[in-house]
Length: 374
Image: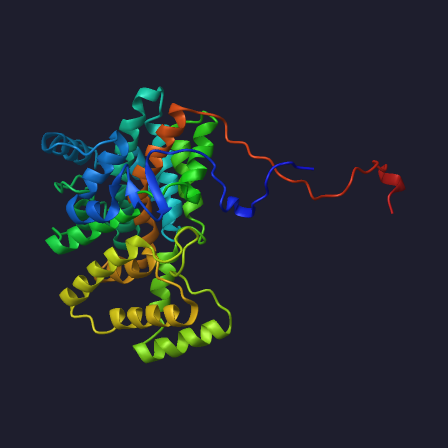
């Protein structure tokens, strides 16, 4: 009989300490290393946020310039990794492509000592958009694209590989802000999974691969894709209201609403909603945003639920011309910095993560020889 406290899903359990972020702390809100997310999303670039998470402080102008140049120099894929991506089926799940690309890079550029860990984190940050879009363009357009763009931001690099042309400033900045919003979220399932792997003294790539595999599950990642599918079902706000009411009557889960940690609002949602509104105006949208806003109103009125980050990020990505199947992989392109920061933090003061379980199976039984079993 277990003497520990039982919590299915570890809900409410403090499983460790971190100096990387606060989540769901009403007095502090959502912060990255002490900086409010609202301030970072408004005033900082994603590269500044990545540097903050990986190095512990915001960069100076000179440090940021050097950091951007380092990331830009690492955009090109190794030739052998291109062959791996070309060999994958064109109908592969894009998250499987990200997972396989990370694992393959771990074979091509293995971690041989801990001094490499920050460079590996930055290498993955620079390469993940290249991995995803090289595979996507090869299998959807038959093009072997050059992933060595001149873009000095991860957002610009991603959009350049997707569009084939230099992205507009508003598109680059909107995606940049979304990357900041996705970058870190304390002990989310994928982050905790990465820390579990790191706690076994495994290599950096294995821990990141673990995180990607965890994010692939629709209960953690994929809510943005599901939210887009929901919004796309309706032609106008009135139809959306009728559809949501009918779904609630059937007790269906409406993806993109509520959060296990936040109780009154997801602080990231208001930020991306404002960008969604800007992009809607830029594209003269008269359908998607009104439908999304009506769904939000119905969910607040009927269930007291608020939209989480994934709900408004879905139409925002649609306005940016990003295919729906790439939404969750963008999460990877951003959260890799949060995962990496947690892996390094786990390694710095490591103890094997090994919780207990309460046994609920049969009592001790005598073994019966096979010829006596009935």
